[in-house]
Length: 178
Image (cartoon, rainbow, N blue to C red):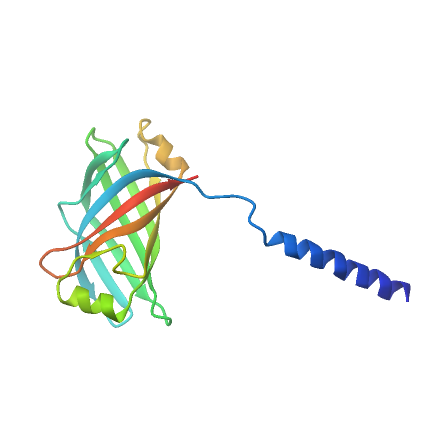
């Protein structure tokens, strides 16, 4: 009987603990880092895999960083069974003052029939045109001036997207998460 009472007391105590464990205890704050404009060219492998080449002409601009995106770079997009797309991007930024920064990011894109139809017509979608298009940039550099990038996690949101073969591009606003 004592074991049963102790077990009940433990369950009751843990139940109270569990309810409090789901309460928000912190916040994520973001600081604007830069906007990235990335010209692209798509190559579909099959219905689940698309390779996106990053073409010359890309750039980044922000309060503490600006430069151009150097080829080669690419995005390996995989469609999941749910229809969401998973991104795997790798590219190099050359800053206006000559530093090299390696940027990688994963991401999730959730489209809709309306968004796909608009893209097929050659329209430029903004952040309201796709239900969800979020990335998680990380940076690597040996430049002392940009070492602060090595120590942060980025989060990006699609600002504009066009998929037509002749002039496809994606534009992200990228933030530092704190």
